[in-house]
Image 1 (cartoon, rainbow, N blue to C red):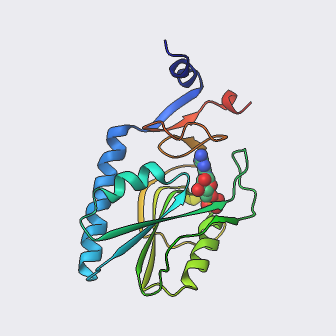
Image 2 (image 1 turned 180 degrees about the vertical axis):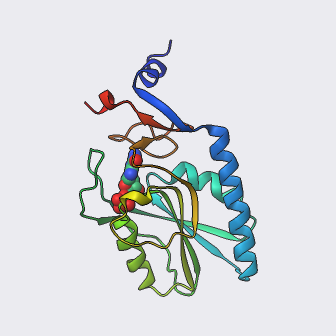
Length: 188
Ligand code: 5GP
């Protein structure tokens, strides 16, 4: 057996969302986003992916949206090498283009405490976009420390640390095509 595959088999607890379930939900979100922004007469939707966790979700989502879309990326830091928030949020990379008067949709992998997105949306609001909404693949509402209006949400999940489909543990597992929970011994 491929050693990587064996490693994944050893450390992966349960799979929460398999590849097919993720793709189906992404398509539903794409249809919903398309319909909503068509209704808003949107001539350009700027989708801002939050690096690095949103990359697989963003890549799949943009391809099921039937609108004029442009993409940009931002990087924030909130987690170090662990499973809990550090509380401090820093901008590591800003978007390249101005968003004044544009329809903006922020694409995130997961909302946990909400501190990262709170900081980020305040910063983007100050640039006076025409509209600003949030789309997250996963949401852990029970962990929220600050209120965040989420317009599009893939799935609500309980307070478990998940990996895969963009989500990492110490930089790894982002490329797994499903979302799963690591066994506790994997953190040791
Ligand atoms: P927040 O500021 O909402 O507490 O944290 C958001 C960020 O924390 C996410 O973008 C993600 O990087 C990280 N995060 C929160 N929960 C999880 C989780 O269950 N698994 C992983 N891999 N990252 C998480």
